[in-house]
Image 1 (cartoon, rainbow, N blue to C red):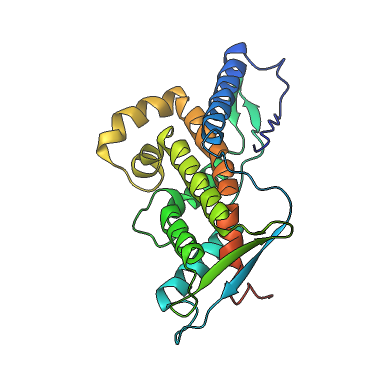
Image 2: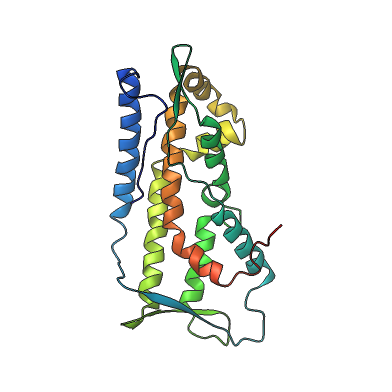
Length: 243
């Protein structure tokens, strides 16, 4: 489980009790969602393993569409921001999120992976690529990925199961969130169906806790997609060059 650390610009003793309780309740909500998603991840692998890539088909290792998908996903994943601090500042007797701009940035950066189902790097599409290559045992028809444990040998099917459980865990997290509201009602679009709610949560300050909950969970989603990234990164060239 990711470690959620809370750093405040002011001490809790200076903050009103109601704010402390609301932040604590938000963090508890995040932890409960993570815990429920972790129950799905039953398959474990201990020790070291490696990926072996085989391809003997009369085609490129990746199609043009796959190559575009892989490069886009790797460059996106490597720069996905993570919220690891909640900064609070006191201004004219009231308390505000000091790093609200960064929180909005975190939320925006994950949209193509968790919300836009038509995007090639939407998480289920990324999983579909990895799963297909792991299940392909005939390199003469296309890329085949084999996972070899240093002690027990071929664990490809087991690893494919792990990836599937992680994707279901991502889905569980998203089902307990409201990213549609955040993206389509606030950050990316202005859907009038959400205007009344947004108006209320904006001037009452409730939107701060909505932003916090979702931004904190995104770091966990990034962690869940780590092995998808590792597979794809191994076959993605070139890497980001220097200035």
